[in-house]
Image (tube, rainbow, N blue to C red; front, side, top):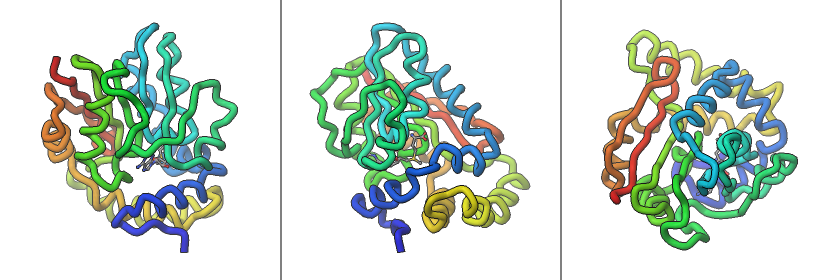
Length: 229
Ligand SMILES: C[S@@+](CC[C@H](N)C(=O)[O-])C[C@H]1O[C@@H](n2cnc3c(N)ncnc32)[C@H](O)[C@@H]1O
């Protein structure tokens, strides 16, 4: 069984992502009906990385978003603890580094912004990881989190929980290199915080001016915050 338990043992989580790395980008797009592209586009806009800035894309996987964040000339590094995922994105022309979100191999205050897309949910300690990101970002720097979330309209929430999440492993089967992992994905989404709770956790980790916006009715959400100057 290669599904990571919901206790999120880091070694099991890394092995699980190694197992789905082949074909990950395609599976992602199929499962989100292509919405992932729009969500990445929104994340890029809100992050607003400018030429000359240094950006940490944490839990970057195949670096699909990292490349996009650097499109205006910022220097963006893709960090992830799954070598399989990083290797799967080897063709993408950005620096890549094997790193655990809870023990980042960077000095304090070296980045202008840190961002995570669809990764925070997998970390063993959400607040600890948010604190670690605050450590490596300079005072006044930014945080942007894109994560699957809770649809705010009740009928959509019920449809999402009772139909879409149950169908995930079945939809993933023909394209995923390890469809078992997508049962974990569905469980981890059900188990994840709502928008307001995540905003509170971000503030608890020392970030300020926390705000969020829903994407596609709240199926995903973008949170942003600033490190106190
Ligand atoms: C769902 S994928 C998202 C990848 C990418 N950000 C994207 O948007 O497609 C989650 C990623 O988080 C990484 N990850 C999970 N826990 C991590 C940790 N503690 N440290 C570093 N990476 C982690 C996994 O290896 C995986 O590549």
